[in-house]
Every structure is written in structure tokens, then in C-alpha cells.
Image: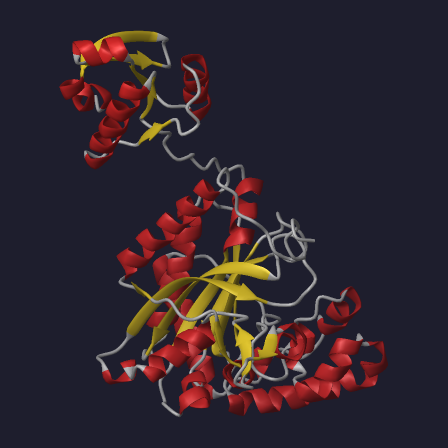
Length: 417
């Protein structure tokens, strides 16, 4: 057990981390273009933050949260998603007093106790963006455009964007009543989860992944038929904005998202390339969340995107992620005097910006050159007693197996060509 990671967690090893660096860099570049600033929040929060924001009718709160009592007898939970923590930080630091909107992005780890499957782990990582303070549906179209640009930049071109409106609390009450009327004669056919959802939040039945429940939900009433005048107008504006931006979409009334705080816009980017659970990115509007958490009437809209699932999809799409550049040079030395000179040269070359390594195993010359070859370095800089005497190193080009003498003072110029 001591040498095995807990179930549902995964090490990101050095030979794979370049993929993470690649998508992280892409995400930050897009965020910068769109005018977002980064936020970093604690890995755990007071449990009440999530029960109030995510919703006590959700699977996350009911079954999946990692909750414990700390030494002060406080109920603490590892964050199961990113938005609630960002909302808490926005309220705590009174950012609502600043000119709005506030545009925030983050990369964060999240924790949910669920059955591990393709691209879904108990510890997983997300990119997320949030826009606070903007009532206009321009913000909804902008975050969808952000996600679309990022996924396109990652080389993914087979996704479908599905959009819906989940209305406001007023029109949702009428819709929930209609859903209960529809599902009530079929209650005995529903899975145990959906039987429980029937009274708590029947909209979650629409989103059930059980094949039987999914089939039954196909003929359920559509929320689009129950939207109030304001929610209808907002949804039309979202569609108009997406049309203007040239972003293709499909209206899917079954998208309700897994969190209770959504209002109006809900959307998902989906694929069939990484298993049945095909959502790669999802989000929407949550105009009442700030008030639920801290009694500030501030609208919000955002999305979350799973990094593990993104990398799986990129692999399935045949995207070649370039590996990080190898070291520029390995300093190879023979003898005690050469060791001292080699250490000084290594430091000087690093200070000038080159990526340089030195053999900490103190192998013989043959072993060091083999090590240089395994590292994939371009040059091996060989220093021995003769080289010290002459004030020059033997610089070996590992790609063409040729070498030449280079004065110590000229090493940087030679290696940086």
C-alpha cells in the first residue's frame, strides 16, 4: 500500500508532464487575450460553502464529497469543483466594490468520491473561467467563445456545442411540476437515484446516465416550453450572439448540468471519442449564486474543463504534443581539478540562459557520454587535465559525432549558436 497511489488518483510523471505544460500554456494565452486574471484558492473550504452553493440535491453533495472534522471540530471539505471557492473569495475580498465585470481564470485540483473511469478520477484537475457582474448575454457568448477557441487551439475539431436554458427559479418551479406529472406513472421504473431525485429535484432525472431512465426522459416535457418571458429573451440573445460569432451549436433541452446553482444558459462541449461520458467542457450562468453564498446580488457565468479528459481527447484526435526541448549540453569531466572547473562552467552557462547539466554520478568518460546520449543533449563539453592546461574544452556535437576545441571563454557563443 505504501508504494501504491490511492484508488482514483494518478501520478503525473516527468515523461508526461510536458503535455500538461503544453495545455496550461495554451489556456493562459487564451485567458490573457480575453482579459482574464488568475486566482488561486485553498484546496479545502468550510463544508457549508458547497452544500449551499452546489446544492444538497446533487450527487456531489449527497455522495461524492470528501468531508472531515478538523482538530477544531469544524466540518471541512476538499473542493469538489472550482466555482464555489472563487465566489467565496470574490465576496470575502469585496471585489464586488470594484468596477465590473470581474474576469477570473484558474487551474485547480478537485476531489470527488466516485467510480473512477476514463478521464474521471477522484482527484482530477480543471481549467475554469468565471465572469462576475455582467447581466448581458454577451458574457455567456464570450465564455463559450473562450472555450471554443481554446479547444480549437488544442487541435480538437470534432466537438459539438450543445446549449440550453434552465430558466430561473420561477419558471423552473412550473417545469418541475410538469416533470413530476410526467414521471409519476413511471416511478417504479426509475433507478434508485432518480426515485430520490423525483421529490428533491426532478430535473436531475433528465440528466441521468441510466439507459432506461434516459430512454424514458426522451419524451419528457421540455423546459424550453416553460421559460418565462425574460428567460426566453435571454436565450434568444445567447443564440444570436453565437450566430454573430460564427460558433455552431445544437439546442439540447436535456442539458441541465449537475449543479443546482445554474440559471438561464447551460452548455456543454461533447464528444464520442472518449467513452459514453462524453462531456469535455461544461458551464453556464448562475445569477443567484452570489446571493445564496453571501447575500450580494451579483450575476455570474463560467465554465469548467477537465484537463485529464482534454488530454485523452487530444490523444484520441491524434494531436501531437511537442516534447520540451532537451538540455543544451552536458559538462563531462575527468579528475578532481576538472570537476572544479566543470562546476564553475556549468554555473556560468546556466546564468547566461543555457540549459546545462553535469553528471552527479561521477561516471567514467564513456559512461558520461552514454548518459549525454540518453538525455538527448546537443553537446557534450569534455574537460580533463589537458583541457585545463590549454584553457579550452572539447565540444562534441552528439548528433553528428564530431568535436572541436573551444576556449572556455567562447563556450557560451559556441553552444548558443
